[in-house]
Image 1 (cartoon, rainbow, N blue to C red):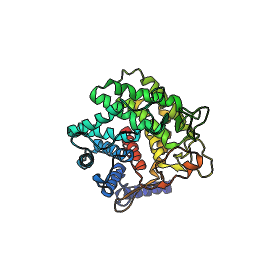
Image 2 (image 1 turned 90 degrees about the vertical axis):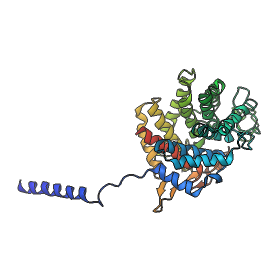
Image 3 (image 1 turned 120 degrees about the vertical axis):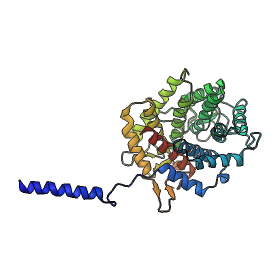
Image 4 (image 1 turned 180 degrees about the vertical axis):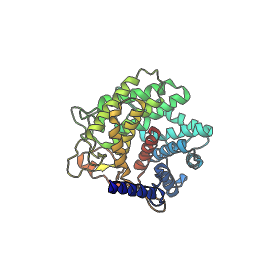
Length: 378
């Protein structure tokens, strides 16, 4: 009995010493969004960014950090970019002949709201007006690029539909709001894959070398394209009127993708493969930007009630897997690794051979979306 009492007393003393020791005290977790944002804006002055979708993705991720932190430096950075890229009449020099170029429209809407400068509302309206004459498929889908007759790429849904939904919400443009949902439904009707995910692309003309002559579909499910589509859907749902008759169908898409994401998550890493439905294929590798996007979609969907809490372990595992690819050096510089660079449509060998970059904006922007979502849902 005496030995047991002494042991308990010793444990109590050791615990007290550990709690009082400054070296043993748990250090506060770094704000990864701030760390990545600060490292990136230091490395890339605002005026050095262009109008492309990866730059716009980073700026939109940065704005989400600003919305939480209210750190004026982040908004100043976005405004410096806008002042360098948009003329007083809203001209950017871009003809908007591809959907990728239209993602910047969301940044213009942010700047119009935050600054009140009419150049940005004019710039957003130029994109909206371009859609009046922009080519479509026979069933109304806006094609990926004016040079790609009849082609729908899952990527393009993210580049266009949240802008349409946000433009409709900001201006009352009913066409824009309605089309944001209609485009997603049209794309999904062509790209849905029995695996629970989506094929990368569809060619109505069946003339592309990658197009199946019977279905027009590309041969592979590519991870980031499915992430773009999921992110587009949850973002459109956030901006779409609650009375929209298409909400139920869009939530159905989210649930379809959530099941696919859960099914194809790599249990060893929590991430998803470049070719997610072929995890055992030689040379396949887990890619960081799509893993961020999938986890973002799942977390937002749980938070909004589109899917149940049974998906939370998938979110937790996905976030941990992405976190494993993010590091902060002693000087504060951050690194996000194994990010697939810009990618077209191709066969399995093409996707597997894509360069794997560090701090590519595909991965930085997607990570900021994810990390801000995780913090908001906590």
